[in-house]
Image (cartoon, rainbow, N blue to C red; front, top):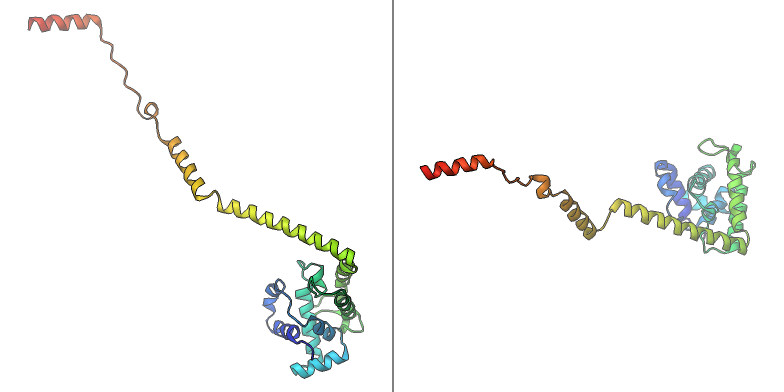
Length: 216
């Protein structure tokens, strides 16, 4: 028996299309090969899908196609996700998924060759071909894995920098900055209140005051 989790997730997503954005960033469910076989119109897979879900061929293929469009072919999807595989899947699974996706795009398989959102599905062919080109040999796959790792390290460093900017200095650094700022803002004696200058009396007035004091 095939694993139905991905197909069931696809049917649920059709009833709640507003969740497509969230689903496009979540890990892919198990049973992706089964879902792609249903989307590609393979008879044995379609028969088992009808038996498991009780849904018609048209409903199953529409649900599978909608899931592929929204969760595999989103703008942010890397080459592994475009093919509906994980980074640890063997090469045979990658090739199988590429073939099924191309069959799903074929006019003889895809009803009127258009998606549920009235988008010409032929636009997806170049993305699938490019994803397969990235991963079709062990050497290319290793190179692509290195690119993903470098990109991930860059993104992590960017996130760390953004977090530092948002968080600002540490508590101790903030205290030092605040203390320094407060001290710089504290008015000095000369700035806040000028030192009183010593009075300089006229010598003549001083002599008159002394004479008056002696007489008095």
